[in-house]
Image (cartoon, rainbow, N blue to C red; front, top):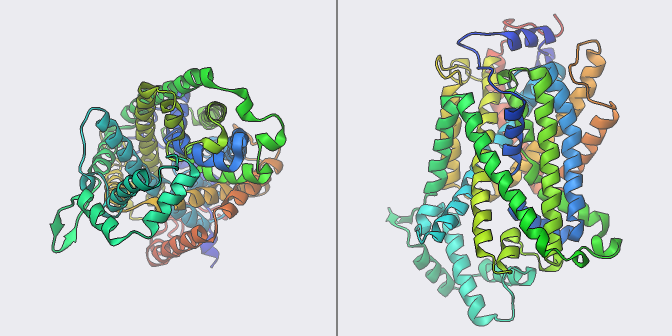
Length: 533
């Protein structure tokens, strides 16, 4: 039992971090590239979509919802920064847990990170496909539904289309995009008539094989494989690709702010606390829990620690700077959105684009669509990058097959085998699976990682107080305790269904651990020293 909580010694970790040669990852990232990776992971379609849902909970107080979510991330980010500078190894929270809480906890957090990164990439690939199809329609290129979505989602889109036709013909008093409209449309789709279903299958137009309709999200599959190929070619090329996209999408966000501010009516923000936050702090908290997905990914910066030129200095800069930039942009977008449109009238499905379309600025809406597409591309790249580096670290420790997951390409200096495996799995899941529920699992998996890192920083301060710390988390234990409380509160707000999914996922991981990992752990086999040695 004691071996279940065996820890890797700091000396062993630092020896791995200082290793060089063709079989190690290439150190090629500076502070700009690391910050761009953080921004690339965080700013995606979430800001252009989730802000609408958040506004209906928080009202103009949506600005404070982004502050609340940002604070939860900042408290965790300060803890990540200390670990990343102190232990400059791939693996992020997995590696930190191995050094402080032991092997079993490290395995749990490594398995948990798969929810954040691999499933997150699958979710994003599907979202990318939606925006790509929308962008192609601007150029009058229309994808068949069965090639643009998995079968179940495609049928749902067809049913939505038929439902909107019925709404336009029979429910003319409802305004598209409002909560009342969406509620009535949802009621139609929840109990479709036989005629609605027949019309939906006709709209879908899917081919039938062995008596079953088929559907594949082809754009989602292709973009996941393109991004995977870029990652396999090299970290320099991946960072350049990401930095270019980040410049584009930040420019689009700044464009939204610059154009949108001209249409802001300060009266829409309210004249007192009640009109600013119509549901009080509870509404702001609920809004924060829903928009948290828009922040996911900044911790992926720490997974590249082994590829940073000067990790002790540059990793804290990358983590904290990316969080500050993204939070400032998010608050600005929330302010413009709730200033342009009274919060009760904010469109839930495409809030930013609709705000501009309502002012006949179709060209601005098209730019926003292109920006969301660019944003999702870089999010996918960083998600897949983070997953491959966590698996590399776990393979290097023997908890997964080392020859496959930790093998580095002699020329590209990337873990190419596990990169293509992760990319292919993400592509298949994104192409064939309705990933709405999987997307909800991403939030709770990420929040659990944040909580564990906050706990681990306090443990390490007690067990190894004299270890040099190039960056120190300020105000310990206040900052990590606040990180636990903020992120734990948001986990609670996600509801019991997501907790059940998380527990089932972790139980599957424990089966893998006890059937394979315990027999091949390098710590258990004495191939690397433990903190007790």
